[in-house]
Image 1 (cartoon, one colour):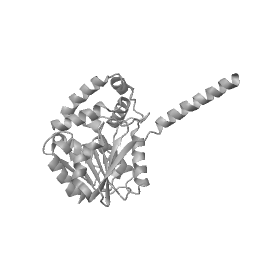
Image 2 (tube, one colour):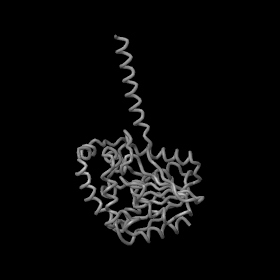
Image 3 (cartoon, one colour):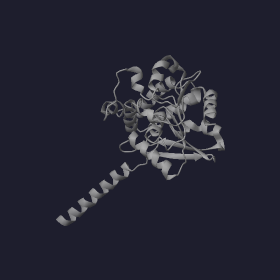
Image 4 (cartoon, rainbow, N blue to C red):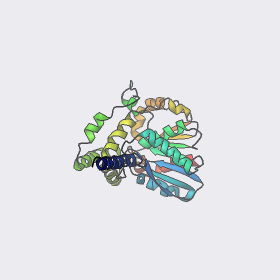
Length: 281
């Protein structure tokens, strides 16, 4: 009887181990590809967003490029990882580029995706061809707090305690309030709200906390490839501070949108697409 009990215990522990291992091995992202161009472009969406945020952009670019559109794990209803980590996401994107033998792809990232794009280009300066950052800063925290300092291991428990208890209805209402502050296009707001409301709450809390802790003001000095930074219209009011954040990124050209809010691809689409076309050509 003792031997049978011990065997059952071992099997149960093994099943538990496999389950935890399987959760930990959940991929960092899913990817949709389109286009048939020789030049590859990686599209990394912003916080809680689906890769569908790039639909108008990839349609505009058409077959001139091959688009690789990412949706990060846990965002917009996609399967979540047990322990979401931005550094792991960065390394997994690098592994994707190498596995698929992409030759110096362009990176286009919005918001959090822009932060990841800068990290990729600074850590792997020879792997990519160009970078476009859409409304992201090397250190968002320092824009409001000049004495901001990044922590080696940020404590995300406070953020988790705010987000985890929310009901689906409460999360939806929070996203609805936030969307109007980030996007002027009322039709696009509906998609943004849906993506945020269906994002895994632990992923929401942990990745927001990690993103808010990022300080890349010095590390972006390692970026040697051509860089275009497209910023929302309101940021022109903080132009000196923003230029100071980007001063180490010698290859960067900063441009401010004429109108709209954070989702430039919706709010100032014609200007945004024109800037991308000129830069890529």
